[in-house]
Amino acid sequence: MGGPPTGVAEAPAPNGADPTIGIAFDGVGKRFGDLVALDGVTFEIERHSRIGIVGPSGGGKSTLLQLAAGLLEEDAGSINVEGETSAQGRLTRCAMMPQRDLLLPWRSALDNAMIALENHGLSKKDARDQTRPYFERFGLDRFEDVRPDQLSGGMRQRVSFIRTLMAEKDVLLLDEPFGALDSITRAQMQEWLLVALGDVPRTVLLVTHDVDEALLLSRTVVVMSARPGRVVTVLDASIETAGLSRREIVTSPGFIELKERALEALE
Amino acid sequence: MSEPATRQPSADATITPEVAGRKRRSAWSRFWRAYGLAILFSIALLAIWQLAIWIFHVPKYLLASPSGIVQSLQKDWHRYLEPNLWPTLGEVLVGFAISVVAGVGLAVVLHLYTPLRRAVYPILIGSQTIPIVVLAPILVILLGYGLLPKVVIVALICFFPIVVNGLDGLRLVDDDFIHMMRTLDATRWAIFRKVEFPGALPSIFSGMRVAATFAAIGAVFGEWAGASQGLGYLIQASTPNLQTARIFAAIVLLTLIAMALFGLVSLLERIFCPWVSKGGAL
Image (tube, rainbow over all chains, first blue to last red; front, side):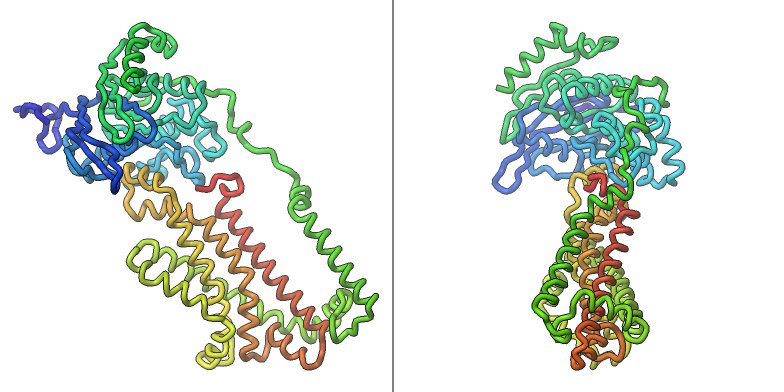
């Protein structure tokens, strides 16, 4: 990925690759039969940075996310996720928070959130003990034993987010995480996620059709075209957010200017 | 992972676990809502039946009246009905249990090994076109006169809906769940055990409910092919004597067996899939 070989790496970089790379797509293409979903997609972000992908529906955004996760193999170009270039390797780096919360209706909220720890071989008791503090932290205490169908949409998404965090992966892939929520809950959840992501340093790839959401939650925003999905423009969205509320951010002149550029690129 | 330190305000603090719980109707009013109309309709049908027999003076040996059937149920219980009820009930229960174990087992195996599914599934469908009525005498020749052929016939007849529903349930689990589990480091087995199998349970139960209604029919076919006891045998033996009311009484008992089995399956479903009645299926 063009990164200079580092002599002494402070963190053990996988495969001896450039440890600063978070996610890098280089000329990535993907087709399903005759349908070209993605064509020549190129972008790169640093480790523990956040990137938002915006684009119209059916523009291959979810395909891009599944490629990053290693759930799909690219047809052209190369993908590097923290040094892992194979699909199998990428899968070990990424945890995905899906658009629908996909909570298992037969498990309590806590048991849903801890499922990755169980997959890592922990006993149910240990997994529960490790997951419980996050319920308190994210305002879900006393809801540990409640079944998902008795939670509100916003709460379900928070359980889903905890489940993604508990996988202890360095890369979080968020697929329209609040797409199914009403606009008020959505705004609350965006604010909440901004704080939550501030606490845990992770490389984040966010896919959304909501320009505000992308600009608010990421440092880099990639605008994509409709089918075939191509990169239209890459925006630097590193505006000052520290200590500001969502309302203050989305109404600031810097934010509005960025939003204008993003919307222009979408047309 | 950093230690959880800051506690964030809840976005919807008004919802508490207590409020989230649903209101419950009383058991009686729920029962009446579910079955009230069916009970009224059945009573009306029985009344019309009884009246028709009185008005048109239908002879007893041609068509039994509801009152005649009730009389037979009392009069024939100890001598004819009860001794023949238990063998049939046994055949139904054992055959059904075997079909559940074999049906769910085969569905799981075929689901996990796709080439095997491709090899076996068409044969499975094809086998269902063979009428069980013609199989029954062959099985009696093969397996003798006792309990075994009846149990096999019940199992054969119940097996198919369970396998087909089970396979559909396992196959139709949303891919998104499987993707999500894969990014959470689940093995193939963990995906099966934690997502696919529980997700397919409602479908398996619906196959079992269909099978429950077939089980008694299977037992009767088996007994007709050769038996010395059972409700099917009783029906066969009562026919030449024109004991119409006794035949109907045996049919009533067969229906009750099927309904009880159906009820048992529904009860098990409610115990094992409590999320389904709340609209939380996958």
